[in-house]
Image 1 (tube, helix red, strand yellow):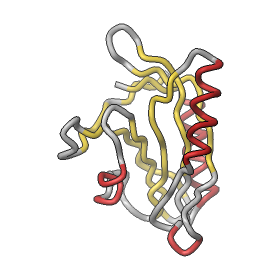
Image 2 (cartoon, rainbow, N blue to C red):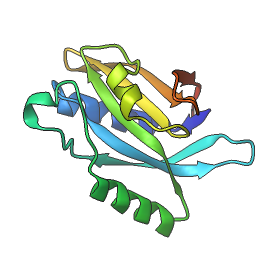
Image 3 (cartoon, one colour):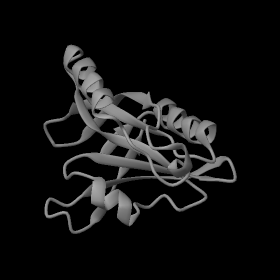
Image 4 (cartoon, helix red, strand yellow):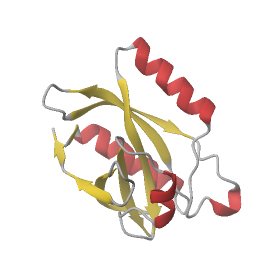
Length: 141
């Protein structure tokens, strides 16, 4: 389960609307509780590094941006819990491309943005064998 404040959810939704018709992306920082829940403490919006003609259905986070986020997390005694991105005019479900580029353990939040308005909001975790994504419960604070 990922625990997320309404403010952080709203910020991710706004990022998706701002980037429309392209995908937004960002990194989720937080901590893992003793009962293995993920508590999102902050999000870091990242500029989509995918080439301009592909941003409408793909995103890329550069290694340097991930490294900066990991360093920021470490300074605050937090972890990188996962990533978020938007799906412009598509459901908030991972695509085959998402599965091919994801790693197990992390949370992957997706917000659907239909005609510029954020809608469905889901979170997913890739199984350790990489066979499929499993939807992760979102607890909102």
